[in-house]
Amino acid sequence: MYPLRANDNSLDSKFLYFWILSEQFTKQAVSHQSRTGIPKINRTQLESTSMPLPPYPEQRAIAHVLRAVQRAKEATEKVSAATRQLKASLMRYLFTYGPVPVDDADRVPLRDTDFGKVPNAWRISPLDESSEVQTGVTKGRRLNGADVVSVPYLRVANVQDGYLDLAEMKNIDIRRSEVARYSLQLGDVVLTEGGDFDKLGRGFIWNGEVPGCVHQNHIFAVRAKRSEILPGFLAYLTQSPYGKAYFLSVAHKTTNLACINTTKLKAFPALSPSIQEQQVIVDALCAVDGKIAVEEAKRRAIDSLFKTLLHHLMTGKLRVRDLDPTDHSHSGTAAG
Image (cartoon, rainbow, N blue to C red):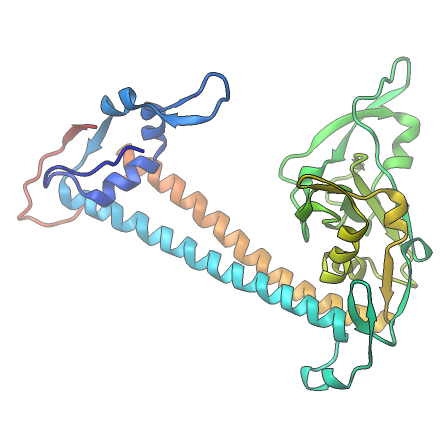
């Protein structure tokens, strides 16, 4: 750790802080360890680092602008975190009492299961009675001599808890005859088979975002029989405390890792209220997810704005001037 501090009145400490966050500072002062590739501050490089030094009032103005953007991002993150907590509480309530007003919850007959209390009126049956489970394509197979096509495929990295991250999609070669076998269909609930404990059984609904997409073997595609269980209800059920408790109870566990197989997934004791109740639950949780998505989009936009402003302000492409005529600080370059 190398403490840095401004040693005279020509450098504002907050401006120095934001300079350290900039790409220009990183290029000058940060190196990577040859064996591990881990970035670290190189003291020799740090001591020879140079930085732009606009007039002192402008430094303070730059720091003020960047801190304002930071505060906006922090506020958005707090709203997002609070909304996620709301979703967690709402899921616990809905999958314990059903879609009833809070004042009526005490009057809902409940029954105990190995994975928590649930409404007594809800049917419980193995998942394979209300859904089909499709396994995915294995990467790295030998396809010599086969009629091969390259298609986009869904990886574990794309499947998050409650949403899909499709920003980076990759392709895989498979036999043309296998395309239909491994293709995702609209409304499939895609679930990861394992990884870290928090990744076990995570997933959400495939809405056909990428045409002709297949899925890898570490992801299950669960195809609900919609007359019995709605895809949205099933997706939220797997995210719920009830679903997570089941997956953890049957998973094969090693140090910090867990996984489930097809047999365990098919045996998942799916809860089945009426289709009308399922739809009310889905609508309520979708509304919260929509709020989360809005806040996350804001956070990404603000983060992008911060990085852009930081770069332009620290390179002088954008100037923020304090119009104080009494200040006569000089512009120049300060050695680190």
